[in-house]
Every structure is written in structure tokens, then in C-alpha cells.
Amino acid sequence: MSEIVANRYAQALFEVAEERDLIDTIESQLQFVAESLYEHEDLRRVLMHPQVSSNNKKELVQKLFENQAGVEVLNLLRLLIDRKREAIIDEVLEAYTHKANEKRGILDVTITTAASLSNQEQQDLAKRLGDSLGKKLSIHAKVDKSIIGGIQLRIGDRLYDGSIAGKLAGFKQEIKVGRQG
Image (cartoon, rainbow, N blue to C red; front, side):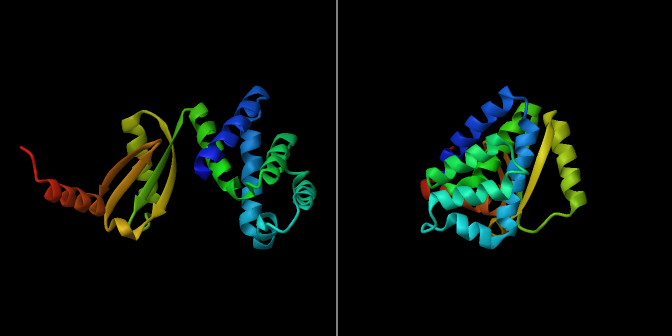
């Protein structure tokens, strides 16, 4: 649910950024805010705390980010605070970045493996995928031991599951319904 809501805020911000030719600037400002909240746990706790008033949160955001964020990002933060949606700033950044990359002709690809890939392995995979798709890629690597082995690729909204867990789930489904053919 929060992903859908975050996407709406990101879309509105992206439209403003596009009108004002500030797509990259706003993306880096959002990134700065999200990183600040990630790096400073106390700040994050204050902004997420339900007993801290909205006015106090907005004052804090204004003081902390007025020199690093433009009016568009500050307005977004104030709006999120007013609507008690401070917790979705990371999702807004992710959705905004996806929209910016789409505009740049870059595909977002999430690679999930059971063990971490080296930088060289990520680069090799990105090059091969990019060549086969004919696009530039933005690669995000994740480790999820539950896939057991193999690889999952999420390209945009599509999931390509070459994981052992995915194969086992497929076999299980075939056994349940009986193989037709």
C-alpha cells in the first residue's frame, strides 16, 4: 500500500521537476534527505515519532535541509509530515529515481542472488543484460538466501525467476495439479 502512495507523491514531484528542468537536482536532493535520515537514527526517530507535533517536525526539516534542498523537496517533506507519511520518504525516492531513469532511457534492474556478487560479476552481468536488451541499466544487487541458488531478475515490473526456490515451487505446483500433456 505504501508503495502505491509513494508512487503518487513521486509522480507529482517528478512532474514539477520536469516542468522546471530539475529532474537530476531534485533526485540528488531527495537522495541527500534519505541518506541523512538513514545515517542519523535519532533524527529519523524524531521525525517518525507520533508524539512530536507536525509543526515541530516541519521546523526541524526546514532548519536541517533548507541549504541542501530546494523548495520542491521541502514542500514534499512538509506535505508528507502534514499527512503523517514521513515513513515513506525512502519509497518516494525509489519511485522518483525509477521515473527519472525511465526518462533517461535507463532500465532499473534488481538482481537477487543467494550469495553476494562481486563488483566484477555485477558489471559483467549488467553489460550482458544491457547488450541483449539494447538499453542502459541501473543495477541494484540484493542477497536473499531463501532463493537457495540461481538468480532472480526484476526488470521494471517483470520478474524473471531462475532461482532454485522458484523451480521447486514450480515443481510443487505441477505435482499438485498434475502435469497436463
